[in-house]
Image 1: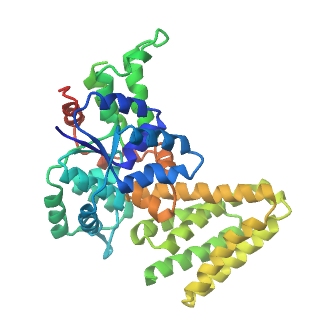
Image 2 (image 1 turned 120 degrees about the vertical axis):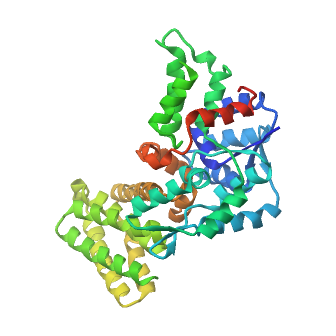
Length: 229
Length: 190
């Protein structure tokens, strides 16, 4: 049984696309737990509850927590490990003699929870995915954007790699693609659509992308091709 | 404050002053873009504030219709005097006076006519998100960017989704069939 740990970015994309009910339906087909950390809760619930624009999305998330669809994971021992890993992450890439601070605590805390609970990490945010899966590409991106040589602190990178082991990452896009495969969007296959299945999947993936999921056009059409619609 | 940060802020303030005097909006925007690089690298609160302020001013000064409001002159004169004061203070290593001058620009907004006040407040708020998007584009995570600018990650996600940030070639790390397989595996749908 594998759990799924959510970063704020994936939940934000799902919430702003009105896809939280699909998360609830997915949970009924899932043997593990959907977990969030305390820092992620602050970002997806506490902060927007005090704003007007995303208040209702936050209320919907609070309902998922209330129903135990999303489970808040609290463990004081995790804080020390998260802070150590955050410090490592933020001291890997050096530009003009300065370490580039690339991540924040909530992102790393969710990563630590994924590692310690052997869970899959759901994150739409680009930087942490790049750091975990291909730090060289992140270095190339930083080098291009900063227009300066980036030096990688190999010792810190090795320590980071050894901490994260082989953690696996998915995005809200893949999660919803699976929901699509499982027939959770069947109700939308109306006579008004020329090619309902393709249009629905395209609509879901573009909606997620346009509200923050870091997925490229090429990847969107790869998913559509893989789904054979 | 690091000497290179100080030097860059002074340079941007001096050039911003010239740009405002010459009504050169493009120059103001270019200055804000130029300073984004150092904002991402040094993540110093003052340089980020100046980057947001310069961008906001480019948005405000490009709207010639704002100048018809009776309190426009108050805003314009306060802005010019405060930038001048901030630049002078920083050159003399007086960080407190520098920050006080920058704060003057924000404080004067509350003294403006209602409509102008709202327009300018909106311009500053939207500029925070727009500049945040540029920081993220430089490789700083969403969470870290939101933290640095004191903005909401929800607003930032909404904005960056409409940019081309997700299209850059460095952003693709795993073939889609592999990632989809991981997701399918979670639900026994492999």
